[in-house]
Length: 465
Image 1 (cartoon, rainbow, N blue to C red):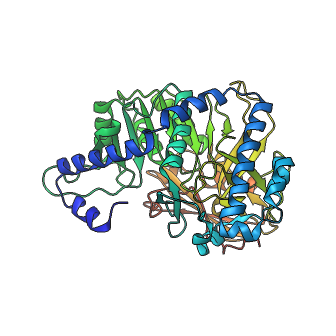
Image 2: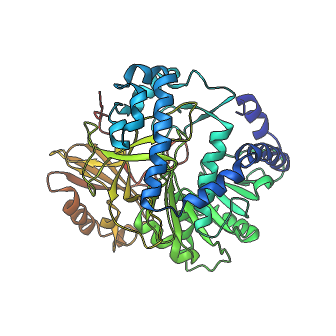
């Protein structure tokens, strides 16, 4: 981990020196992520990618049995919580084994983090979550687990004809500052991974043309971005009918909920597919879109359950909270972990030919779902904006159970059909919620650079004991 002093020194250096330092650090990360056994792990995942349903179930059960036995024997928290003798796991199915463990709220993991580190863990590496809605969480792992994690990402990229070593552009929550010439340049270069790192904080009309020129110069084979960041560039190009020479094979999105309207605009402007992937620093689950745009769970990575407020599994097709059990990080295994996001499982078969479980949709964070006075959870509200013109950016803000404010950034308020928008939202949220519109000059991103299209200010009452 780079120290605060080193970061401060780096930020006060000229851009060329920052690029050298970032590239040198990039070589270290490349060895950590893609060195050693990475290629053998990736080859192993390429084989299991085409396993039958039965073969995947057998593989996952074996991995799960091994991880749960390890956790119940070596992790202090699970030694206390497991209700069964681990020796009995050998004769059990996955559901029965998982039932021996309680669900794990994120608040409990934060409060008792040290209790989740295996007593047998050696040569560990600490990484941190992004801290989207609170302070970052430190996760203990190993180089082997990190390489396995990146092998899954590489397999996902391979589905779309690209490699992690191809020329790429990454948009994320970085703030760049520097001294000397080029100090206002909002990107840096990681030559080790052939990657240009763009800041998501400077995406204003004044700066976007410079982003576009750099993207045209670099010609990334793929773009890896927060949905809101690449959408902002796409909408800028579309609104002015501007021509460009940016031709990626695929645009990969993550870390925010990808809205249908964003996908539509990005694909139209860049003439390539947008493929979303869901993972986390906690290494508890990996879900990614295939060539046909369906989300597939990686069963070799973790078990994904969808549960209700009491931690009980919900029927397929119903929305609930993602409950994840990781299978790749024995240094800090997380079992039935409530990561704070909501989604729906599906029983559909995908035309891509893979037999991994399908997730119908990932709706967003628990905090990003509107909760009505009757207790109904409402996600995926972006269709309400379809056909409503004049909106550059918007955010739905729930300030009370019966009150929602729609914050809108617009170049021409007269084009915004506010009455129609409120009517569309009322059809989805219900008439017992008062909806108002507020025009604003800009909408702030979260401290980590992410944008939340729906944000709840309600007190957090979701807690599983």
